Image 1 (cartoon, protein in one colour):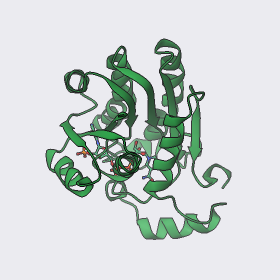
Image 2: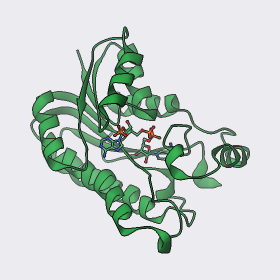
Image 3: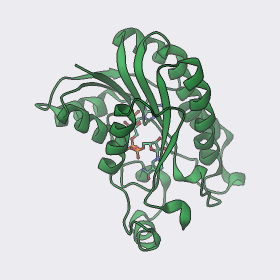
Image 4: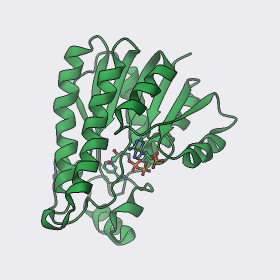
Length: 235
Ligand SMILES: NC(=O)c1ccc[n+]([C@@H]2O[C@H](COP(=O)([O-])OP(=O)(O)OC[C@H]3O[C@@H](n4cnc5c(N)ncnc54)[C@H](OP(=O)(O)O)[C@@H]3O)[C@@H](O)[C@H]2O)c1
């Protein structure tokens, strides 16, 4: 049976991916900081297959080391972890602690996964960046920088960890709980964007889950950024 570790699997895109992998007969391990969120996700996924939970903060090296010790060997790793608290707004108004925190989670956390994956991951690692790396809007600069750097990280790791494949998915706007941290009027923002997107709608967690599965399955894709954004880069 194929085992997939989803760091960020207790919510949003990661939870949708867990559901999709289970439906395909694979077992999953989901990791995140909150034991309560992990337990709620495990309960939601109950009856669909084998789900293991491991509390871990991807920004803490000891947590990532312990996580990989516990899973020992894993076929695929998907990283969807992010906490957007305090990082949206003009740069002059962003606290440096918040900027460091998002770099710790999205970039250094991703690097830590690469560091501890060697010899333990056999198939692929897929990271999640985001549209703001390619279509910045003046209110998400530090997040855009962290997301953009993931493409370089994945290319380097694709060489270092080969034949393990390392890729990045760049989602557009997707309706998930992360929007509660961003402090925008979500419904108004979604309505405005949806009409301008070539896809004419906001993304769903399942749109992204299906993209993860395609990267996990296709053994000839590595060092690639897959844009799953409904054409958002063209708006
Ligand atoms: N939703 C969008 O519109 C959008 C657009 C572009 C890119 N993205 C990116 O897509 C990815 C998935 O986002 P989502 O929308 O699915 O968010 P979400 O619903 O808020 O889920 C985030 C997940 O990450 C976990 N997490 C947060 N910080 C963590 C940490 N330090 N260590 C381990 N786990 C952590 C959360 O659990 P805990 O809080 O319990 O740790 C949760 O399970 C993120 O990288 C985000 O930046 C999202």
